[in-house]
Image (tube, rainbow, N blue to C red; front, side):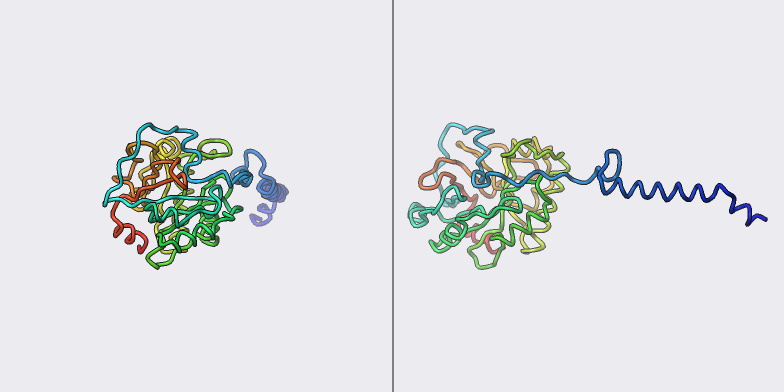
Length: 284
């Protein structure tokens, strides 16, 4: 009799309710209705509309200005470099070499939709002139995942080879040219996005990438995270007479972008060390 009672008329009703609840949950997930798990699906921003206007430092002067005073004179403990992107067009590499420039970073990609049309002339041209060169990626963390952008970068010029003349790739993290300064992400969200990018890049190349960022942006958008200082070399922009305060986690900088108004190419950099140390960074 207990078996018969367990099959009471109320049991089918409960089963139907359960099935209906499951179906409603599935539909909600598919439609992304508010108040459901579907609402957690990330809404991506549109792909960059003017990537040719975005380069390492393009937003720094706009947001932070340029400090007065010339940088200190070059020394044997530093190496002169430049960084370029499509806005520089075909670069006069022999002129730069003759002026003392010995390394270059070249923008390769942005998001997962843009590749620099001048990349070959700039990346190969600097190499052929005798320079140590590397590639960088302009990050847009609101358009796609860190892993997706790292893979796109590696697949479109951002790889690495131990030839003694190729620097590890660099990730350009700066003010959003298209809207919210921090790309609409929380500090934790941005830190996790970068961890995803760096882990993917290392898995693809075997190298820990360089990070380009300013102290002001870093404080505002990551909460001054110290998560990367022990691993990723710092390339810091500050236009003036000194590097100034560094972001949390770094005890020293590796590269200083000290001006955006240099000769031949505007963006000039100093490697914080001798030529031997620059070669060591290239060799890993």
